[in-house]
Amino acid sequence: MIRETLLLAIQAIARNALRSVLTILGIVIGVAAVIALVTLGQGSSDEVTGELEKLGTNIVMVRPGAPGMGPQGPGTRMLGAEPFSLADVDAIQTDLPSIASAAPYETRGMTAILGSESITTQVVGTDNRYLDAVDWPVVLGRDFSTAEESGGQGVCIVGQTVREDLFDDADPVGQKIRLETLSCEVIGVLEEKGAGSFGMDQDSVVLIPMRTMQRRVLGDNDVGMIYVRVDPAFTTDEGIAEIEDLMRDRRRITGGEEDDFYAMDMAQITSMLTGITTVLTGLLSAVAAVSLVVGGIGIMNIMLVSVTERTREIGIRLAVGATAGQVMLQFLVEAVVLSAMGGVIGIILGLIVAALAAWQMAIPYSPDITVVIGAVVFSALVGVIFGYFPARRAARLDPIEALRHQ
Image (cartoon, rainbow, N blue to C red):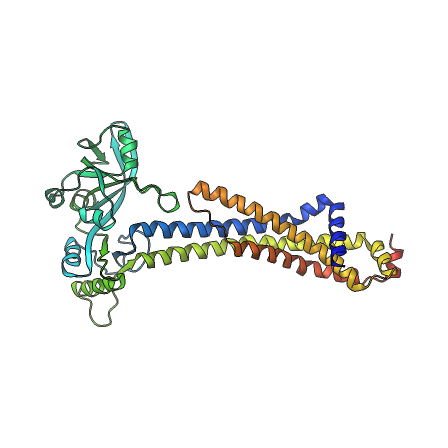
């Protein structure tokens, strides 16, 4: 019986192919949008996790002010929170047994210029301890000397992208570039890292000594962030606990006073970023799912029209012995088949769109089988919900009145 009902439903749909296609369009768009957004959201989360893992699971970032992911400045720091200093960096490295390396970090977007060539890049003020903390070796030339770091001299180490854009195939070591008004000599080239999160080029970077950044770019002695590498013999939680105790002491925070700084390890940062991605993906998917409701209303409307058009057919079936339940099942199956077809087409379209978008954004393509199965089930459920009323109306037709219908 089910097989016959299914065949009748397919035949009825095929008789009005164009109308059926237009009917399921809302389902197709809704399912495709949800599948694509969820897949891209998962891919973005995987990309963030992978990039942060490259930095190392024992990296801790320490910032002044309230927790947040944005750049730290006067407008984002906690009211009254003092910036860090180079003395704070040295104290973390020398006074804490759990800390293998601590480095100052301050960044600004600037234009690097060589002759007629220029590139907008990130200029980072730091020292050699940063290279050790994030395991980023110099593959050509050398790192900073002690005199260059302490004296704030005009020297720099460039990333591979800066090297290629400004120098082509020439050796950049020994040549001078301008960082807007700051002139600096290139003393080294960093190892290539490639694209980072969301396609960001990690090699578009210029490192200069921290004191050079402070004196000749920022005009102060502040340190915006401290990169810390915890000794492998200790856990990051132990390292963070020691950092918090030391910084509370150095910043004279006593008793129950709230910290005016915070320390986060890679696990916390990963959780924060993936949480944001998940929320945004969920919101966008919820908006996209509205089209499923619209598609369901379209199916109900077409099924009501179909009941009206086929009133005489329904009357004949009832007159020759078909039960009301059988008539109801036929129209209900038609609605479910329409909705399920839309769901399957939407899944295929969504996966294709997600694959193309993931390739374009240079993030992992991470389809979730549970989401795909859920989309099929949900689309079928839409057919059941919105097909019930038309099917119920068909089943309740009076056979005599139905046969009289013209």
